[in-house]
Image (cartoon, rainbow, N blue to C red; front, side):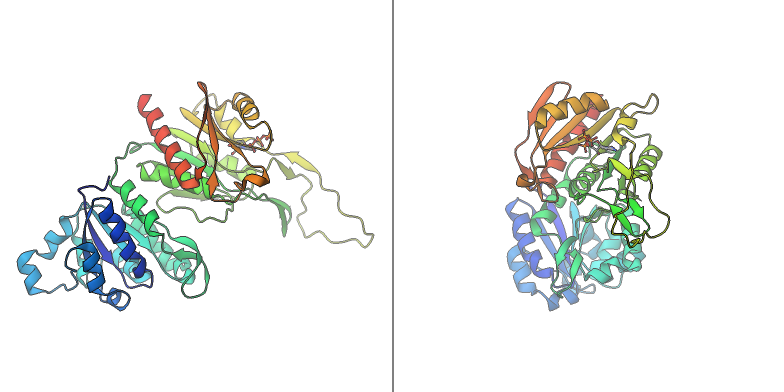
Length: 400
Ligand code: CTP
């Protein structure tokens, strides 16, 4: 998708700017031209010489630069590209973008451009989680700006959490998606994700090992194809993607209510690892040891099956309902039976035996089971599984 395209790359002033050198190399290798723009602060982290050497073009940095104004004014510069990419998008740059402030070349270009914009945020975890940054992020997403990352992990400052800039290869994939077709434009897709927490008492709960990684990747891939995504998630570890309609829930029953409230939808993907049982005799106050050495007897009740409920709706059933089947034995046979039992259209079956490392890991090996039979997909990253599924959903909805 990148061949023959021009990217206006705005480099912000953050330590992650060094990774942008690799991004430039990857973009050029994929056949795109890169016009680099650096903020004053970016020059503290990478030099214009290395940026222009890799881009093969001069760096633009000054708003009032007579030579470049004579050659190409800043308004024109903002419009020559097929995509504007901001990496790293610092908290400050995001704040200025959200406010429409134009006080240097980078922000003036961002205000003047009529081309799509993709940002790759990068900042300290506290800055990322600050309500002001989250507000700005929501504003930018609502303005239609695409967002790549950030990722969770160890940071240059020694802290740990979300805020680390997406790796260059992931930004390249996001650029590819931003430039690509939007076959799901105008479609609404419901995605459930993450584990559910079922309370035992106000301080204890029953949970499972789902990180939410697969559901987050699916929501992101559907969003990248232009879908309006209603993302209903339990408390997963992986942060939800930007640019989706987010509904946070805790228990299976809350998830069912939120999923039903999210309808109508053109398709629904049930990636959540819903707890099958809840504690029926959950206590309203903290359970205490009673001194006898006896453990409390927990009684369980079955939770509603959300996938089955939605699949079997008499009215308002989404035209395409996709479930997952997490199995440890007889994967295909169990998943095929599950598809019939629940009444969904497709099931993505995966083997979650501990030896596979899939549950909580970054890869997945799935078999797509439809009315036409079973189709094995090779083991691949959860992002790749998500992209493949999103494309299949787009094809199915287009054929309707
Ligand atoms: N699911 C759901 N609501 C539930 C349980 C599961 O929506 N209460 C959905 C999951 O999101 C997944 C699919 O059903 O898409 C299958 O989940 P899985 O845990 O594999 O199946 P179970 O229904 O738990 O069946 P079993 O206990 O027989 O394995």
